[in-house]
Image (cartoon, rainbow, N blue to C red):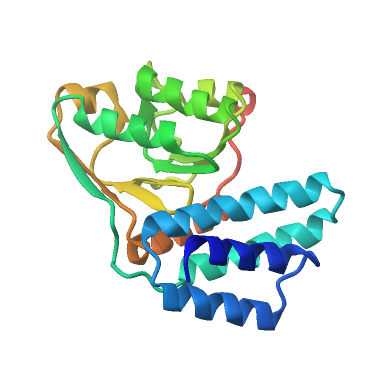
Length: 236
């Protein structure tokens, strides 16, 4: 089954604003037989969002459409792939290659960016995060409170620009360094999102779209997002 046929399945399933069990099974079976490449999965995810947006414009009940979208994306994410992942990359610092790899993903994101890093203190990275937010990408940031008030830290600025930020306020540290883009691509490694990491430190960062890795990290992000409070600079 090709892209156009799979896209037609999505169109048919949203007509009544719900993905019933038979439709879910059929979609799952057809996706499994198609053995999707990651680019096909991303295409169908984007089509699902577009269909949901169009249905909302036409007056469909928002809760019904959200449920349809959640179920559809879950089926797409769990569908068998013909390979572990098609997209790979790795970069090292000192040098700007790590930061440039991050910026490329920030600029390519169309729907969501979930950032989970110990600290953010690089004006260039911050500018591209804000740029993504302002073009309508849903950006969420989980970070640690240890460096928030350090000179050059950009977390308060991100909140001022409307980016949602949650902070680990415990006596321990949220020390992860990963980011997930559109739910299908992930950057992960030792690289701190700071100027000093690019200029001085021996660091690394890896890019993958292998859902065997992306999904567990997405789950971890969601758990931390539920666990930590929103950052409110005026109360800190």
